[in-house]
Length: 202
Image 1 (cartoon, rainbow, N blue to C red):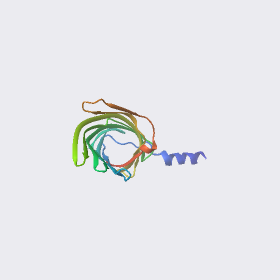
Image 2 (tube, helix red, strand yellow; image 1 turned 60 degrees about the vertical axis):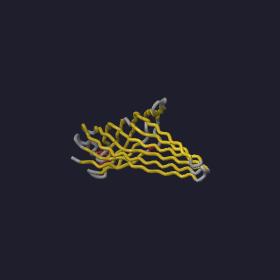
Image 3 (spheres, helix red, strand yellow; image 1 turned 90 degrees about the horizontal axis):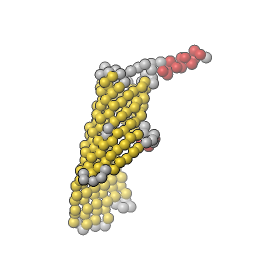
Image 4 (cartoon, rainbow, N blue to C red; image 1 turned 120 degrees about the vertical axis):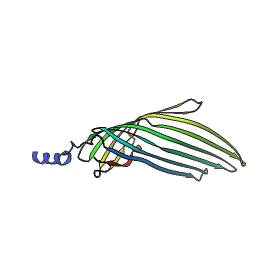
């Protein structure tokens, strides 16, 4: 019985000393698009986000990196001979640090600390009987985010990773206006994010 248990432990965790070497580089990122159309109030909302990411292992199982990308939101609602349209577009910058812990030959858990930032423009159009009024405002947003995650190596170059939940703080502020603070705590399964990563194996 002891031999059977030992064999099972070796099969599951036998190569748990596998490490991600210092000097390893990887590429990943997020791409997302969603569109919602409500025919009850003639409202349509489009969201788009693309953030390529590069990471570098500064030590064994310790990586730092940055994501730089673009995000946009278009929200339009039409009522009779009038409509309102809001367009948000922003440059997104998110430096981060990750610490990995080995669970098996190809399986890791990690914790990620990041500082997401957005620098954007908010444009609003209000049209009534073909008379349109437009306004424009700039905004900044920054935060601190902690995310736990899982990483599975399909082979030496490709991995599937998932983050679960989001713990952190964010601050949103229009120019010449008061800021809005938001605190997030919890492992919400609705906040699971799954992606792929390409590793330049050494």
